[in-house]
Image (cartoon, rainbow, N blue to C red):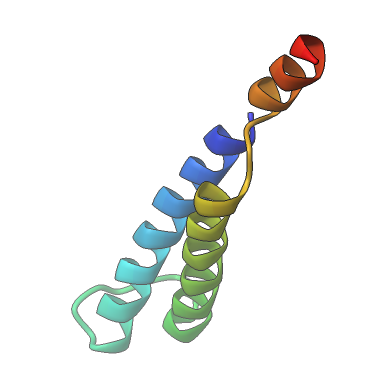
Length: 68
């Protein structure tokens, strides 16, 4: 479950980051502030990547508890 959330956060953050950077340079017209979109995209991307690297999935944790 945690890995799914981390993957969604990573993909969503990457999309927001790209759209925000394109909005800053004027390539894409956005309804939101491109700076806010870039900052939020960066935060979600970094959070998703760190969750993928350092968190164990809830299924793995439950399996370890049952085996010991």
